[in-house]
Image (tube, rainbow, N blue to C red; front, side):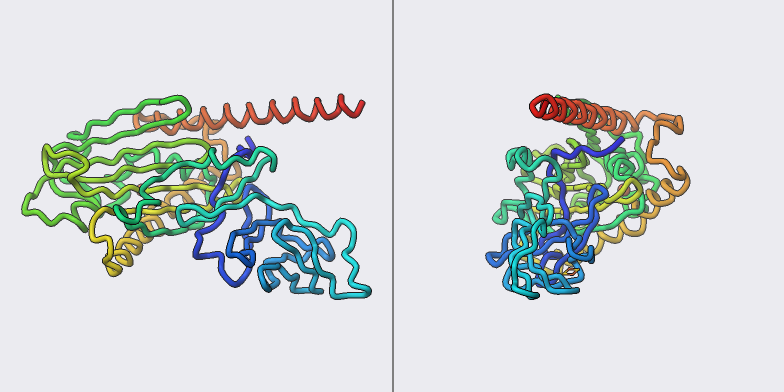
Length: 356
Ligand code: FES
Ligand SMILES: [Fe+2]
């Protein structure tokens, strides 16, 4: 089906891009990330135009990327700026594709489409990752050997929680939950309200301090294209307002690597114990372990079992009620990709007729 290209994708955690270049495949393209002298992130094609060695095997020197084979150097726009050989002339055409990049919410984001259409206002918004006086967040990354839409399906279908995640399984099962699915423009919402249930989940197990043994819990997911998920997770005293309770909002950001591989970035914030570094480490480890040992392996097994296709619908799957949000998201994404193809076809036609 191809990818939605005119979009921001997370390419790396901020902490992954430091003194060494970082190579990563995104939407089937090899990129290298590094930091310019002022610390701002740079993303360019990870292939030296001289002998096609990956530049991620080179070094970053004074904010410039030096090829590890013969030392051509490239600046933040991907332009070759130094040639240590001969008369030091810069060879013609020795430039790299450059991807608009910016740093926000603890991630490095890149724009994979037309450079002139890169637009910061099209970034997803996660206020809880930008409010250090109210929330402390931890971040993580997991490569997954499965198509990115399988990862999105997993996040939009929270009915798997009772079965795949023993830590969250509940004696009362799913019967007492109130689920609602709806679509708001191109946003898909899958809400799960759990009124007056025994303490459960991360909020109930890690942050609950009152003597009550029951809470109103919620796990409400919002998806927007291509793979942005905003997860409102929390618990309050029975009958209390959301604001009074424990809020653990999460961002889940899924970036295609290839048709059969994904980059899964996540961040979870909390409005409790903001300065407790031991809690940050523990929360990171718990969330990382759940994805690494439960969701990741099941998605990878699912992809292996599907074989050499990423087109779930071509296999005519049985559909259950909780699949509705993921099916809607797939439909919206397919439409957006198709619209983008049509628009770029029109643009190419326009260029051809301008030339003729
Ligand atoms: S391969 Fe990069 S400078 Fe030769
Ligand atoms: Fe899960």
